[in-house]
Length: 182
Image 1 (cartoon, rainbow, N blue to C red):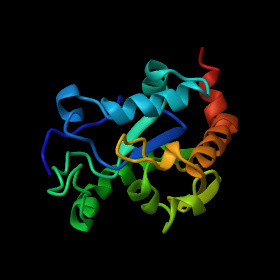
Image 2 (cartoon, helix red, strand yellow):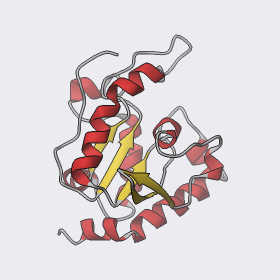
Image 3 (cartoon, rainbow, N blue to C red):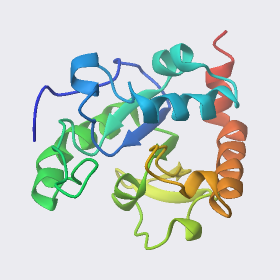
């Protein structure tokens, strides 16, 4: 893994967004989702009530791994391996302990898989799931990764399932509470 460690703002929030790992642009920018995927992600959240600035100040942003995993020789970013995921697990576990989230929004298959086994995104995106965090039931609404390299969220059925997921997030009481902060 290649430093620096990338984290979001320290926000006491009932909602936690969980990404995979920062890309190569996030380290120099000093914040998660600071590049192309972030532009797409924040358009999604703006459609349900929070622009990027509001989102960053009201939603806790975590990641499965906190440093850039490096480039994949075949293109794109390398997916963190199981040892790297295990090494970083203490951070997200501590965040869960402190924040006791009401809503988890994992972004992408790797982040989703940390909470719920997944083989195919079509089986899990667009639905609300209940997972156990610190032995408490917690709502989870997963999203696909907003990567420009992925067409999943731009073609059917992914496009419709993404809209279903965003609608569920927009109606969730924890999300609605974030909108009341204006």
